[in-house]
Amino acid sequence: MQVERLDGRSLTIGRLVDIASGRCAVEVDPAALWRVEKRHARLQEARAQGAVYGANTGVGANRHENSVDEGFHGLRLLRSHCAAVGPVEDDVTARAAMTTRLNQILAGGSGVSRAVAAALAEALSRGAVPTMHSWGAIGTGDLAALAELGLTLAGERPWQSGSAPVVAIGPTDALPMISSSAVTVATAALALHNVQSQLRASVVVAALSFLALRGNPEAYDPRVHSARAHPGQVEVAALLERLVAGSGAPARIQDPFGLRVLPQVTAPAVHAARSLHDVLTAEINAAVENPLVTPDGVRHHGQFHTATLASMLDAVRGTFLPVLSLSTARLGLLMRPDLTGLRAFLAAGPAGSSGLMISEYVVQDLLTEIRVGMTPTAAGTLSISLGLEEHASFATQGARSLRTMTALAPTLLAAELIAAVRALRMAPGRLTEGLARRAFDMAADALDPDESDRPLGDDLARAADLLPELGAVLDHSPIDLT
Image (cartoon, rainbow, N blue to C red):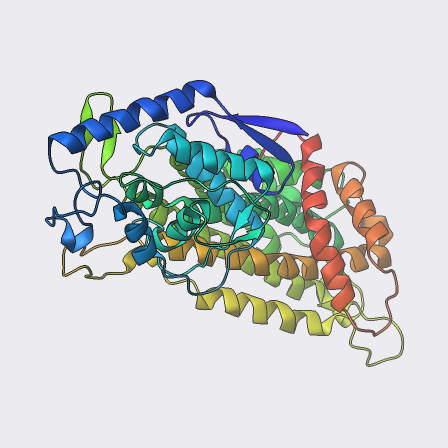
């Protein structure tokens, strides 16, 4: 198993996903732990000299309350912020959140003690997973969930799985532990990983539909797209042109939009995903705690506000939806005998057979479920903590919404894949060699060739599971959509 050394500065999203999924172990850079120790000492010095938010004061609207119980201030703060309500985060998300929080702590700005940082690293290395509930975050820090993590490290809450040594939580450890959006960032990073995989798969599936529908490749000509080269558009068009190279004479001078505007619709999603990737890379390697401990002192600020992350999450959701909508449009095209030259709904057997008719109902159900959650989260407003906190990004809700979107999208894309494969089985002369042929063979080997009217659930599940492998076909292409 590979090992990732966490140093607070160089963690990538790919490595974060590998660690969360159990494919990669972790170790901590000793220099980063030394930095944590030095910044903790700096926080203690500042606390001895005057008021430091959360270290010798209350928090939120209680920020001016300086009477602090030295012995239990840290634990009392964690207990009071531990809402412990709502759905429980799955193990992968919990491990991603632990990894993100540890790496942020190693960036050196939190002031948390070396003992707490080491305890979190030990728990992660042992595979221990805390119980972390979803509710209680609004894009200004995952206070409730991270309080659960802190109390679990302190031995006051049981681990959901595994175990780790108990660590003492000092009076200056609690706020630094929870002053982060690590759960939100982890949720967003895992969802983005899925978006990137699904975008790649969607292009491959679309190419198979193009071949089945005998599309016109002029729509992907580089001379067309260089005339208005929006970010990502030339690359998407070039990839599609490569996938459908060698297709026969087109059936139409001009195709329906489902084929013709593929580059224009997919490119914004690719661009938005790349932008979110940059934002999340910065977040997982950032010192964002309030107050922030620097080599020369302690500073109070609003760096915990995740406005940029929220806006990028809204952008990815807003641009990925049309990609999925266009997939449902192509599914509809594949049902039409006037466009495929095959039977309606790609049916086989006696007259009146339904074929893949029901799959259109499935995808429209899923698409509507996604649309229901499409309100831009960054548009929300609030006023809490006696009016002191009168704004939030709601990036947390954006991350959850993107996660839901990527959980529904595979079945939607799977319906198009099943239809494209069935059409190409019925008309094998439309297949080309190269990447598209490799993708077809992979799908055809996995999908049941029975074309009679029968339940489609197993086919949809099998096709959905196949999508990551199908997207990996593009690894053989010099054009990278991630």
